[in-house]
Structures are given as C-alpha cells and as structure tokens.
Picture (spheres, each protein chain N blue to C red):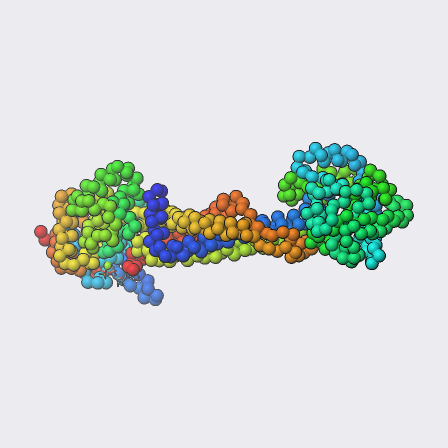
Length: 406
Length: 233
Ligand SMILES: Nc1ncnc2c1ncn2[C@@H]1O[C@H](COP(=O)(O)OP(=O)(O)OP(=O)(O)O)[C@@H](O)[C@H]1O
Ligand SMILES: [Mg+2]
C-alpha cells in the first residue's frame, strides 16, 4: 500500500511537464468552480437582498385575499396574538406593521395614482431601505409627513418641503377622503415601482384616514438568516397561516426571484459538469499516455508477480496523486480569484434581472464547500475516472506488453 | 506422469501458434524438454526461432496451444490466473533484455519489490538486499537510481531482484543483448558463479556465441523445435 503510494507519487513526476499541464487543467477547473460558486453565491445574495431587503422583507403575513383584491377592509385577524407569537420566534430578527391602500397623489403640476403605505418609522428603518436611499430631506416622523420616490417627485415636480394632496377611499364605506401632506423626504432605491409609485406616511395617520384604527394589512418579517426562508419555507408558512391569515415567504411572494435562483443553480450545475468533463478528458488522456509509454514496464511488473489488482491500484493511486497535486494548485488559484472578487467585486448596480435590480456591487463569497466539497469532488471524480485506464492496464496481456520495447 | 522433485521444468510436446490476421504462425512446434535443478542452460537459436515464445510458455506467462508444462512439480494448465500469478512470483525470477528496473525506484526498492509482494518484513528485506548486493559486487549502490548505473550494473541489479527470493528457476531472455561483449561475459561469469554457489537453476536465451560458451547445457532451437543439444563443462 505504502509502497504503491510512493511508487505512484514518483511516477507522476516522471514527466514533469505533462503532469504540470494536466495538473493545471484540473487546477484551473477547480479554481473556476470555486470562483463561480463564490460569484453565484454573491450574486444570489445580492438578488435576494435587493428583492427582499429594499422593502418586501423575507416573509409577509396578510389576511387571506388581501393580496389579490387590495381591499382595505381585509385587515389581519387576531393581530395581538399573531404579534406575540412572532416576537417569540427565534428565527425572526425584525418585524414591521404596514397599512396599504391605493390612492392618488397630486401637486399643482400633476396627479399620480400610487400605493400609500403607512409605516411605523422606528421599525420600518430596520427592514426596508428607504432610509438608506434618502437623497433629500428626512424620513417620515410625524403625522402630515409624506416620503416619496424620486421618480414620483419628478413627475409631480415637487421637492422636500412642498405640499401635496393625498386622496383615498375609506375602508368599507368607500367614501373619498382628502388630506394635505408635506414632503418630508425623497428616496431612490432603484426599484421602479417603488421610486415611481409609492409613498409613505406614518402608520397611525394611515389607520385614521382609512378608518381602521389599530388594524393593519401587512406584517413584513426579516429572518436572522435570509436562507431560512428557502430552507424552512413550509414551516413558517404553515405556522402563521391561521385565523384566516396567510403567511408567505419570499419564494412565494416573488416566484420570479425563486425562478432566477433556480436557473442560476441549474446553469452553475451545467458549467460544473462541463468543467468536470474537461477534467475527465485531461486525466484519461494523461493516464493513457503514460500507460502506453510504460507498457513494457507494466509487463515486467506483472511477470514478476504483481497481480492485476496491484497494477490497477498503482494507476488509481497515480490518478489520486495527480488529483492531490492539482487540487493544491487549484486551491491557490481559486483563492486568489475569489479574494480578488471579494475585495474588488463586480459593479452591476441598477442592472435589472427579471424584475429585480442589483442594488449594490457583487462580491464573491468564500464558502467552506469551496475548500472541502469541491476539492473532494474533484478527487473522487479523478479516482473514479482512473478506473477506466487502470482496468485497461490490468487486463493487458503480459506477453504482448513485454514485446513492446520503447 | 511421475514428477521427480529435482525436475524444475518438464515440457511435453509444447506447441504455440499465433493467429496473425488470416495466417497462423507456428512459433513453437512440439518441444519436449526437461530441466533439472541446478542447471545452467542456454537456449540458442536465430531470431524468430521461438526462444521468447518458448520461455514465456515455460513460465506460464503465456499458455501453450497444445502440450503440457510442469514447473517445479506443478502442472501450469491446472492453475487459475491468480494462482499462476502468485506461483510465478514465488518460483520464477525474471531477467529481461533491458528496462528491467522501475526508473523511479532506487536499486534497493527495485530489488525488494517482489519480497514486498510476498509480504517479507521490512528488516528482512533490507538484510537480504544488502547480502545480494554484496554477492553482485554492488555494495553501496542501494540508493542509486537505475539511470545512475551502467547497462551491466542494471542487469546485475535485475539478476539480484530475480535471485533475492530464491526461486526455483531464474529465467533470463537475452540478458546480454544490450551489453558489449566484455560486459556480457562478466555478467555470465557472475551468473555462473551464483549458480555454482547456490545451486539455483538458470535458463537463459541468447544469440551471442561468447555467452553460449559459458553455458553447461545448450539447447538449440530452430523453427520452433529443439533440434539439438550440447553438454559442456
Ligand atoms: N504475439 C505474436 N503474434 C504473432 N506472431 C508472433 C507473436 N509473438 C511472436 N510471434 C512470431 O513467432 C515467432 C517466434 O518469435 P519469438 O519472439 O519467440 O522468437 P525469438 O527466438 O525470441 O526471436 P528473437 O531472437 O528475435 O527475440 C516469430 O516468427 C514471431 O514473429
Ligand atoms: Mg526473443
């Protein structure tokens, strides 16, 4: 065993250049897989967070039917009990309450239909990004304040401090209500519908205007770990879909986001397969080349009493040694690439991908699997593939091999 | 048939045909032969006369088309491939024309290879390597690599590897073909000396008349048949 390992390790360095080149192919393959993984994780995080952390949250709870009808009378049932349960939930880090309604917002210059959103400013800042996206003025803090997106401000030709009129209909009765607001701040978060057609006022005033005191339409939740929504989608949804309410995590709320992520997983899978195919080709090629060169030597080994299995073992060990050698180079290259990617990153801000927009630079992410799973896969794959040439050598006729003098 | 314990090889009407495309090549055409313990025998014949084929069949590297071979008392055709492999390991030492040694292994590692296959302990292996290198006049060479040795030295290491397990038969197919005549004779002198000292059985093939001169028994092969024999001293 030990003897074969020694022999195998020395054998792979018989043709240094070939070993180096094959090692480099495998190493670059591994480095690419590591880097692509880092990039994709970074990209996914970015896509998800630009989808969820701008405003949506990782999960939301509504009254059944509210999302479809936007009927302001459909407020969340048994709010106090629900909140109590949510506050006790260990996986949740932030939770915020909202009131939502269609409305129109008018200025002397124009009138626009919008969605008005009543928020609790203290809680909302933890979940959504309007505070970070403020380009003018300040966050809503009291009744009479309204915060709007930059596109909406442009259309209405207003600046912070200007007055606007909000028109909405009271829940249930449908009676029209008008109220004057002062623009407290203008934000830009690179999401078209939020920048162009949403406005925020304080929660209590929204409740008063709609005539639904102490009631809300939406609870948005943020998990401590955003992946929780993917991994425990059903648990969360089942737990809080009661009392006629419905709980949905982001994969259900924005299925296209889930779809993008699944697609990236598939395309990554295909790329990885491609890289593996290249690696396999490289290994088989190298092993066969070195096998044919050493046919006579294998003949001698077999003649003096090496069993076919011994020869097979030797060649598989050679492949394993080649893999170890390559993995070391690959990890060095992969780490360098990922380090570069994680420090410099890729600027895709504002680029839109199937409805969501990248809101920040993408940085590659280091993951344990890049150092454990991927190298192990390469190793396992290489060893597995080497059984083909190994069997070939083991089955070779001794006398034919001995007739081959280089 | 009765097998005497001092008969190392008994070949009965051995034939070996090769199929090459549509032609059948009769490489060995009915060889009857007995080799006894302690012999120092040369198999001589022109190129293509079937020397290599015969030696391969006699040692179980190849199976005869017809006839039977007993090696050290065992009928080869009765053994499975696996048995044959281990039997060869324990009973035959091989020396080929060239490239006998694994280039990435040192002299010592090359010599201990078969002992390693046999499961001989590390200390015992080392002891035997030191002994055999002394007998071969290669003391102090155990850490050299084959490429650091001359052709004659390489062949001596190959003989050391073949002998170190004390097999019933040492078989050498043209061991001197790649050596100059002086080195060839020196190698044969060592082989003969070892044969006399240890009473191990040596069978080798050759073209070289100088090498033939060193043999005590000469079997002459022509067109796949042993036509004549000479005994010398
Ligand atoms: N695998 C094979 N397929 C076909 N023909 C073969 C094969 N091996 C040997 N032969 C033929 O059998 C005959 C005997 O060959 P062999 O190698 O045994 O001769 P040899 O006496 O060892 O010759 P040399 O002195 O050149 O080594 C030759 O005619 C050779 O061409
Ligand atoms: Mg020959």
